[in-house]
Length: 83
Image 1 (cartoon, rainbow, N blue to C red):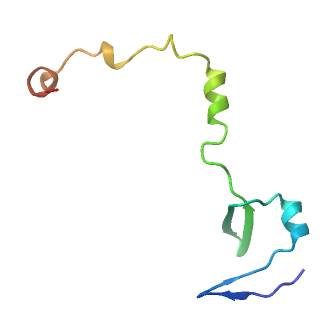
Image 2 (cartoon, helix red, strand yellow):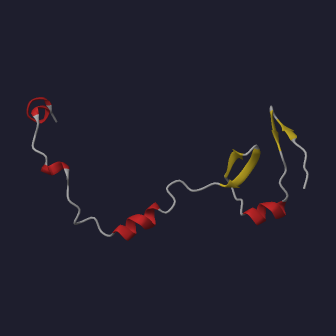
């Protein structure tokens, strides 16, 4: 399929036919990148996608060890730190 670049302000754009948008699963934001001299338009990945599921799979945090509580106070803690 061939399409023409169209002027959009000082930029250029293309019109993507609806069947191609549906076939690629594009919605809202897209990711643009250049690969081997070609422009690739792909669905944008959600930032931190899958983090919530990963935290749930890790289990409850009530048994986590607090690492900073085990360190002895240093000079800064004893002499300089103020609330």
